[in-house]
Amino acid sequence: MLRLNINDETSKLKAVILGAAISNGLTPTADEAYDPKSLEHILAGTYPSEEDMMLEMEAFNQVFNKYNVTVFRPEIIENYNQIFTRDIGFVIGDVFVKSNILPERVHEFEAIQYIIDQINPAKVVIPPEEVHIEGGDVMLWKDYIFIGTYKGSDYKDYITARTNVEGVQFIKDLFPNKIVKEFDLIKSKIEARDNALHLDCCFQPVGENKAIIYKRGFREEADYLFLVNLFGEDNLFHITRKERYNMNSNVFSIDTNVVVSEKKFTRLNKWLKKNEFIVEKIPYAQIAKQEGLLRCSTLPLIRS
Image (cartoon, rainbow, N blue to C red; front, side, top):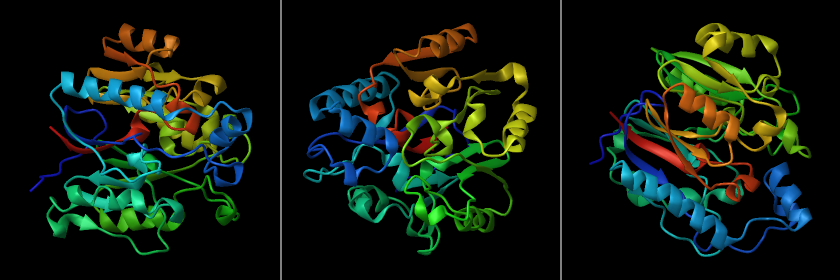
């Protein structure tokens, strides 16, 4: 049995599910795009190739091997995108929560069922159909569970709105001893530079007391100021609109002092090193064209 244990975003990683780019399928049509950044690259003819994405994911896998992390991979479904495992589920404490994802992506969960079968069934939670929540919107920080959501009355009109208020309430009810804080995120169907697909597209803690943040990712300034007050201005790295578009907030922590980052994130990587982080730099710019990066590609199962 897998003994799940996830209580934060940065403790030493022991086991993770890493997505897969093998047999990723043909380039989607514009009508099949799940997000505006993918749409942008589909229309421009710059959508990433399977070969390039496989190379990037293998570079990520090699970093996990370097740090002796147990890596699980999805079973391969032919001609199907299985890169972003963060979307399909998440762990809080010793509980695995299955995400209610877009209907077109339901088979992604089936591909990790062999892993779920290694978890105590009493610790696997399947939310009711009306509860929408994806792992990219869920973060653990000390006594908090941070959740990205979209509170607009037009929620159902946005394919980029992945976690609803019912999802927030579900987590509040499931973990009554935690402080659940939701953040209302900006959404766009057509402009990737103004779309925070998930919370980790505009914010993420690193280390023991620091975080990466994009102020304009939040619809309400009060949500942004909450994080400024919680972490302290001096502990925040503020990214620009272009850096957010390139997914600078979507790095991934292997330990409190080890961060995996895209090799071209020059300003962020310099700040991380200045703050005594070990920065494992890898290429991931092709996968980023689908509006996801390193955190999006992972589903952590065990941290120490």
